[in-house]
Amino acid sequence: MAFADNTVIGEETRIVAEINGQIVGFGAIVVSNSELRAVYVSPSFGRSGVGTAILQELERLARERGLSELHLNASLNAEPFYQVNSYINEGFEEHILRSGRKMPSIRMRKKL
Image 1 (tube, rainbow, N blue to C red):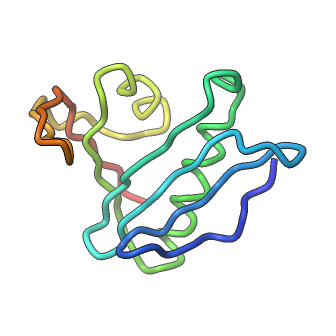
Image 2: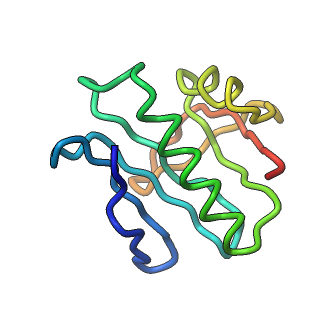
Image 3: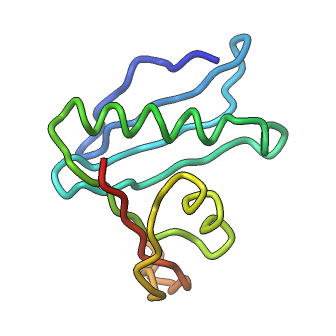
């Protein structure tokens, strides 16, 4: 797996994961507030290590930029993934999406 050069768009630093030239996932952090914003994997590459590789690369970039921790609002179904990767559950809350809709989520944090 290879990562396309990380790109800063607005406040987000984004990476794209590729296997044999095919995009298999992407992720993003917001350095200004130590936020892990996204880790997404194509369903056809789920449970194959792609998500963990994306997460590890984002954590590496965060450390490189001087961050000592990352936090996120995880979807309920993503909580086990983040727990396996040493993120700590800090409780349930509602995350407001850009559309204005509310999504149940779990506030999580990890010291880097």
